[in-house]
Image (cartoon, rainbow, N blue to C red; front, side):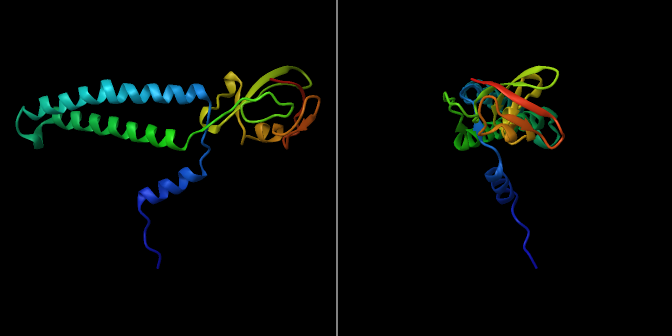
Length: 164
């Protein structure tokens, strides 16, 4: 019989398999969020918990319960961002003649030209041209050079026009 695993152990194992590549801009954004949470939001939430605690009977004090919930949520966000920053792998953009994580690529298909940036899976936004290195297109592009032909399993074909 296998013993049940603690939630923290399962979460830690999932994070090890997670993609931790982040752009320097995303890392800076996370640091700004962390500072805001620690300096502005947490002290305000602590004051609110103290203020509502003075209202009396804690078992029936909805304002106190809500204030405690908000403080726990802020503390959870702080912990999550700190963990994310601990395991973050900064994307180094290097001038290279091959496609790498952090590269910006101009692709030409039969009917149009598209520009994509290869990023980690946490920052993908295909509408803005940011695709994951683990996506089918991103994985197919890695390691290729300008003028290489790329074929996807879906049947789409591309030619790499430029790597920036």
